[in-house]
Image (tube, rainbow, N blue to C red; front, side):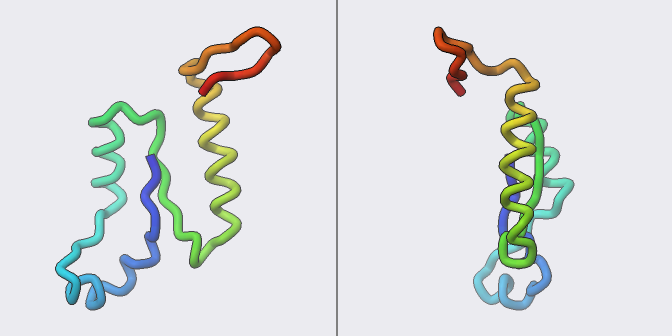
Length: 79
C-alpha cells in the first residue's frame, strides 16, 4: 500500500479550504495492517522524483519475497 502526495501535508491551509484532512503515516500503517497489505510506504513524487523508482523496486522485491505469486512454465511470474 502506498500513501502518495505526502508533500500536501505541509500545506494544511490549502487542504482545509477543500475540507480535506491529511492522513498521517500511522493511519496509513494501521490501514495497511487492516487490509492485509504486505507493506506500507509513503511517497512524494513532487519532492523526491527518484523515490518513485525506489518504491517500485521495493514493492516488487517485497511481493516476490512474500510468495504471493505463481510461477508458470517458461519461468515467468504471474503477479
